[in-house]
Length: 124
Image 1: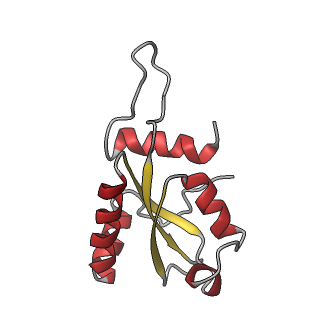
Image 2: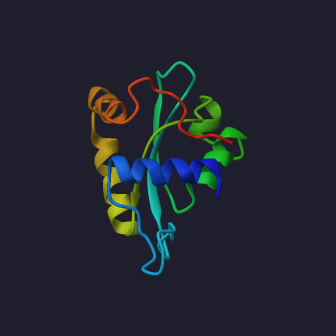
């Protein structure tokens, strides 16, 4: 299990919804499909980017390695500071749209609900 997925499990237990356990054991069994909304920032925490993915590990690795052209590459945005897990793509997309409409202060408050120090939640 990758370190980032372990963080997802820990955050899921502490903050959002209970993780999905198989009925046969206490082993974490990801849903058939899991979706994430996430917030990235740069090293100075002065830029925020909101995105959606079905594979948080892959997507953050792509951002960190500058494999995605556009805003995150141009402004060096690759520090994962917030994420939420969903079982429905529609719910994830609606949440992303909701957050994108918020002003910066409200987004900052959201990040600080789980990450007061704005540390990178992604560990390789």
